[in-house]
Length: 354
Image: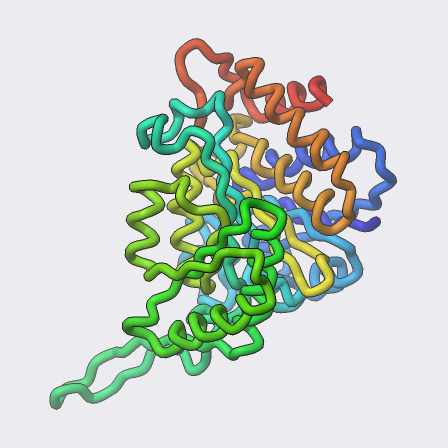
């Protein structure tokens, strides 16, 4: 069982260190090897996803990632920016299915900006297609064109989905819904975009394979509103790359802190890249105050989805619940009456609970 460890940039190395400590304590015989991705890879090699990392990721059974990016790389050419490394590894490994759970732990009910009665007991899963849509569609670029008799710069990107791409992600979502409350909401913008009319048509066709799952549809603007108005109406949401990017970040804040949320990106054979939903947080990097729990929970998802070690995954998740019940809080989830700790101390608490 080989894991490619990619700490990345900003707070990435700090939070990754705690997740690796948890995996080592489980003593499951993992072989872990570290590589470079993102800004640190640009600095070392000039490439956000260098060949050595490509080989390491290809050979591994799973990839555990910290975070990438930071303002010091914002002025680089687009193909050299850290985020291109993230897009590159997703495409290279064929990681088309992004699973983002949004769970509100009872101890953090007051951390949400919404009323506790709106979010109490929240447990939803967003399934986002990850390798298609406007992020990867061709043609794309910025050109100078003549408009109304004058020269102007025009930026353009193309939204693109094939029937097979839609069907495979919708099937992942149906399978996930079968393991939960058997409700699936497909989110699109079919009243405006032909691409998402196809999305809805394929979702309807695929529903015939899953008569035990209730399928509904919602336009993306309404879905964004409903996530704030009544988020507990949802069980599993499936949507495209761009809509999923936006909605999953919105859903993350229902739980009080994006620092609490893990994610999994899977290929057709359950090989996965696992990472926290938050970014590299360069403003707090190196201070030892970042929340490592999302990365630790991402490692738990890795145990579950790639290695089929369900009991070990539950052990890690229970340890996180225990430390929250004990009152341990990093700065992002701290409130009066709880114990404010740093990154390492939070990791120590999880290890103690294990």
